[in-house]
Image 1 (cartoon, rainbow, N blue to C red):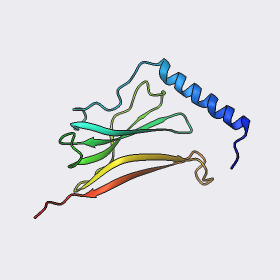
Image 2 (tube, rainbow, N blue to C red):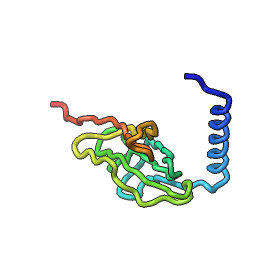
Image 3 (cartoon, rainbow, N blue to C red):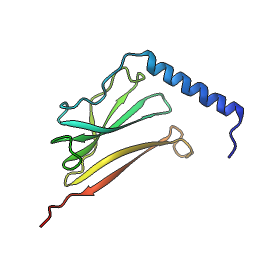
Image 4 (cartoon, helix red, strand yellow):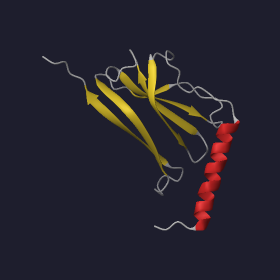
Length: 131
């Protein structure tokens, strides 16, 4: 695969515009520990959709900030470049299994999904007590 000067320029312009837009606005807290029923949030990840919307994912740790226990994958969305965010939603409630490390990907190459298709890769851990 080759990258032409034109595509590199576009990527640089897009990146510069995105970074400039994000730096020009006031910081916004997307996930705040102790809110929405979660003691803490870890491992945030964010994607931008074709329509400009943002989706932010994180581990929602129910009982504490530890790496083991009741951990869900939560999500918030924004339609105004991250200036404000819609209410938190649970994307994966692992119940007895632990969910972690959200890694969202937007696939824009499948013609069956012209607006893109979102994949959310996660890890799952079975928690057992030693005898």
